[in-house]
Length: 188
Image (tube, rainbow, N blue to C red):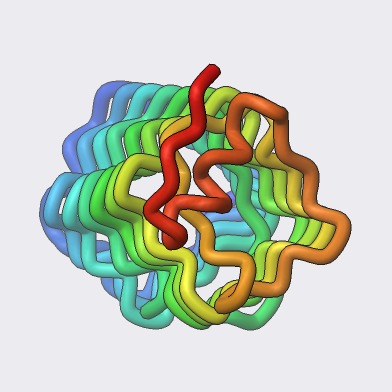
């Protein structure tokens, strides 16, 4: 097992697997992880900037206090990650077709992200923030959304009868996403 601390990686190609590695306080800038096998890799206090992690394998991968900024992250199975201490945030990321199924990711921040067709079913997103995010086709089913902030999110459809939305925050313009199941027309 290799261990790396306080290092910056810029423009590197990590498309081959990284066997059982651990990274502490590292920064990855414009690195390619597309289709990489990141299974069992641990990322602690790391930052990814302008990286491509699309379709990377995340079996038992640990993300603890990790920030993703302007990253392409299509089709990721975050639900396969190590759930212990999982903590990450996303800013200006493409997260289409990713899965957070059954994850407890309370207080997660999604800022200006594309979250089309993302699976949040059975997840705990309490106190999460979806700031200026596109949630077209995202799945919310038996999801805990207590105190979650959707005020500037768009294109979401959430069935209040199948999700826990107590004290969640919505804008008036987004209320139609809560009423979609009733097949009614709301004029603005």
